[in-house]
Image (cartoon, rainbow, N blue to C red; front, side, top):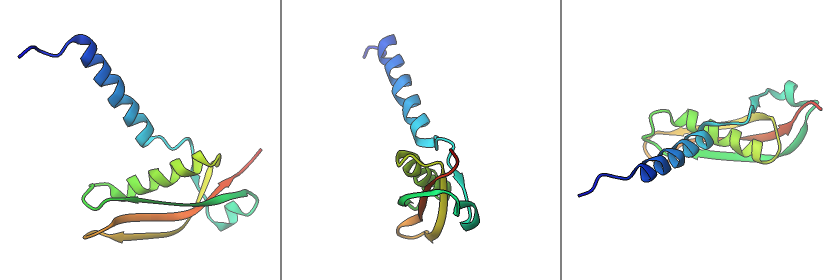
Length: 102
């Protein structure tokens, strides 16, 4: 069997590094409380889940929720609920997306 070509290796590195960046990036979305959100524009609701068994599934669910906020054009997340079911569904984070500042 031939070893993989340099092109195939580079393509794999580019694809996997792109996934890692998209997965962990949250576009600078910060967490706010109700007082912090009071002067911000509400953009909508977000809800994200991470499967049980992922070692940092709360962090993953939170990162997904932050990405949803960024997709809506927001920069702040008010968490309204966080549910943890380690046996079946994992972690769910729900809240509201906001755009704060100018």
